[in-house]
Image (cartoon, rainbow, N blue to C red; front, side, top):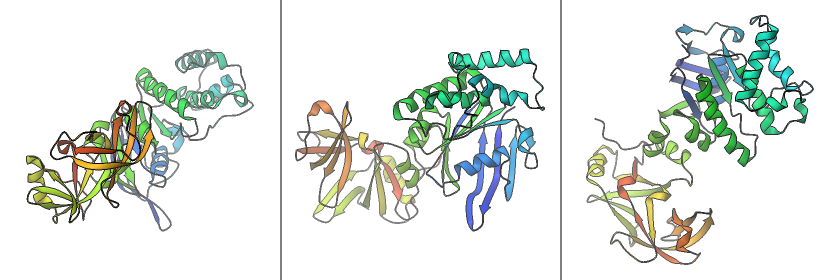
Length: 369
């Protein structure tokens, strides 16, 4: 059993609350990603699970055991740090052997050789075993660092932004490698990152953390398509979601000031949701990919805009569209449209994909079954 369970965990450093009443359950063999900005409390959470910090309140369970009083050495977890924790003048083989020489493990030389052979094959580093780690590339060093964790065969892997120091192409390759590795070895992964791409592409489930508080837990699809609040909506998704101050008037969503407004028709479900708002003021969240762009007006509810700024991304363009000087939003258009700065286009909001948030609480308006 390799479940991880945090119950009401709070950790303070002086006047700063790093983790605030945190409750998380990670299933056996799950790849769980804790996502949040710098200073959210992600690393503190990992250190609490590993036993490197002690909680001020709450309980930590590994499997069926409460481990608050257990020292790190007996918790059977492996910690992969953001910075490579390797002995630079040891060979790769010697670095992999080091954790197996602990008196707690008592591994024979023959067993050690078999384990290193198996792990190096899984990580594609067999050809590096006799090379000193000081002579490795960043990606190779990170593979060795992960290998040092794997040779111990722990119940749980704790990973603290292990890819953040790699270049973009190598990060992409290593994301795929870690996802494959998780499937191959079948262990529980608790991974923390500030990178939403890592979270969305690797995690079975994602927890979004900010200022020590857990704001939402769900599958990548749930967190992206049904964000519980404005912070989650902004933090997950690239390009970032458009958040437009709006007002409910006669079952329509009105954006902008009098004389220069956009009116969006609400769906039947959205009309029922607005009764839960604390006022008629709401925030419309609409992702750039949920805005249909055309050069000619095709829908009566579309808005005439000018292209204020364009970012070319290869297969698509990210357009900053100006409705008024104060009302600018982002949309995505295929490059084949050949849209340029200054062009006039028409934008149609796909309201069945829109999110509506209470302007006061910043919580998503949702009908609970």
